[in-house]
Length: 592
Image (tube, rainbow, N blue to C red; front, side, top):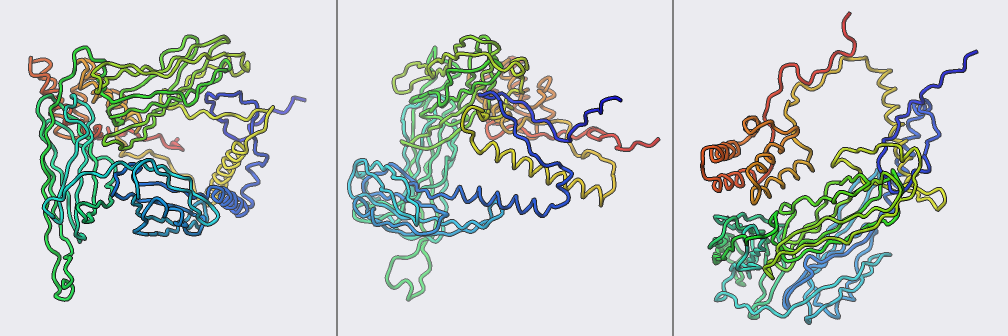
């Protein structure tokens, strides 16, 4: 009698991704899908219970300052957030700070099937002395916050403008920047009268881009014995051409509550308040001859490895994590930093992650990127970090930064793993995770992940069985509104847009046209097809101006500027209509 034929279990095989350690253990769920439909309620109860346990394990209390560098006489806000109950004990703050302006806010939400109550407390801290101060750890219920550092500088020598109830000041972090250098521009509105309403507007300058960074910061400052409330707004200014650049003054219009003792008695209405800020002038320097390309003017770069393994296995991914901090830039100014080719290995890179902040009067950005190196054979590999060429704006000299090279000793890997040709799609590599080692203590997270995956699959099977019993089979058709032109994913689109903006600064005409065509996926065959896909008149006209300048001996500099203005705000969107019948699947049960 013939042996019974093996049947499929009905479970979908897990996709293979590069991993740092050998996948020596496979997690399996010992329950058949058939039994799931019998007691769906039980499974939902189990899911909710597990979610509740996981949610409770992440209860936390944290504290942070809205500004960690202030001048003597100013205030900063200490925020404490907790979901564990209780209120902060502010007593330890009295030694170095004057505490005022207590606020609190409570919030109730549903998370993972359970009710979560959180509270946010805030106080204004005014330092009693200058120097590096420590905000002590505070007791909040059964938890404690971590201590924080606050740097207090000397008092700012500032005179209120003739005792005006409101005035504006502007501050630039540099007076002679280079072309395309990121310049910090800080706008401050001072007002001594409580405001009912108001609006602060900053006109954009000609010949430069001005982009707002972050949210407004509010604090108070004592000036000539008078307490002023301050609204601080930060901007990034990027000059686009050399020469004199004038930034128009800001304007404030609002209504303030009268400060007289008889205002409420005589029902006086709020009075009008206006303030005009002074214009600012900077002298923009041209790009130096022989400067590194792409042009990247900065105050400093620090690059290091967060993870740099020294041992690996053939056919398995070793994950390197790069961290680079750029002083004087935002993420849109950074080029793509790729890992140099590694002889005897495949290299895959995940999309970079950015963390921006505004410090010392200018923008800072931290880049974090993961690279997977998959050795093909045993031996020793030399993994060099990405080289970052930049221009030191302080010293006026070219610099180069890179993390130190790493030697990777490659041992023989599992035969099945080493034989597999690992070729994940570029930019789509998932974060490699470490599989549990059979020889050591296993982390519970892989088991929980497998458990949640099995629960999700069980729910899907139960819903499918329910639909089979109730519903009837219907023909399946794709949406007829699907466009025939697709745009790159969010990460790819942002990288393509960033590359275009860099090439518009220093790239050749051929490189600029290639970057334009690659704004869409798949790339447009030529610029005429690209124009047909663009959704704004300004973008279409800018590309047309570029084509005329390119082939009719026009002004390429003006055409570059037109492209920069048209494509600065965002990548293009699609407008093409679908062709007839496109995107429609054949009937599930075709007629005979």
